[in-house]
Image 1: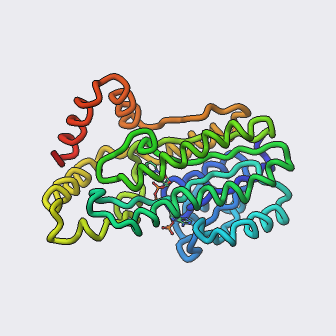
Image 2 (image 1 turned 135 degrees about the horizontal axis):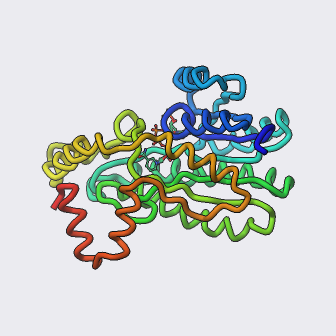
Length: 283
Ligand SMILES: NC(=O)c1ccc[n+]([C@@H]2O[C@H](COP(=O)([O-])OP(=O)(O)OC[C@H]3O[C@@H](n4cnc5c(N)ncnc54)[C@H](OP(=O)(O)O)[C@@H]3O)[C@@H](O)[C@H]2O)c1
């Protein structure tokens, strides 16, 4: 029974967050769909209108890196709805480029959002779920949180950190009635690849020793766009996990993600590394 349950989604202006907000609403949840810039609400409004669930969505401004504002935002939700049954930590972005070309500031910015922002949001919601003795905290990490991906060292680091933190949190909160689960997508068709990607400044510098390899990698990414899957699959999975009273820790999703994990497990490590470098054209 999901009727009357309250879900909070971060980063719902596009991609997986947008689709998850709609899918949760279609499944009877009242959804507080948060986004850092409410001026970008049109796409969500349109999708929700089309699905006939606009009246089940409450769009609010929330930037997960404005950490001091998060407890107040959560308090306001509880004041208005009385509880939070599901938190979907979805907001995130990726910095791309060779580790050598990436500045420490770029690495910090990546961790600030993908790790500290999601941690701060979870910490703001934890007292509410503790008091309720129930709640699901579902965090979208990535297959890149299970294997280091070339050109995405900062992104992989942020997702590994989130995986480790959540793994600990899950053990700490199980007896409180709180369920923590991780969603680990492979490549899905969203704005993360183009509109929202941040290219490390050093990679754009013509004098970078990696310039030519960076260009080959960019061509590989462009060429692989057609293989990205429909992000609705991820949204549907998130709803299934939200409804499961006892979810697993990890949910890997996407044939590419499953293949990568399978290869990592079965192929000798040095061979695996060579295969990856060749596949993404940086060898
Ligand atoms: N698509 C994939 O292939 C894939 C694979 C693995 C994991 N993921 C993960 O899936 C999650 C959603 O990404 P997506 O693929 O749906 O990409 P997306 O379309 O770019 O969506 C990312 C969302 O996060 C929001 N966001 C970024 N920084 C934020 C902040 N500081 N506070 C609040 N919201 C913020 C963005 O808001 P703006 O619109 O304001 O930029 C946007 O709504 C991310 O955590 C990503 O790492 C995606």
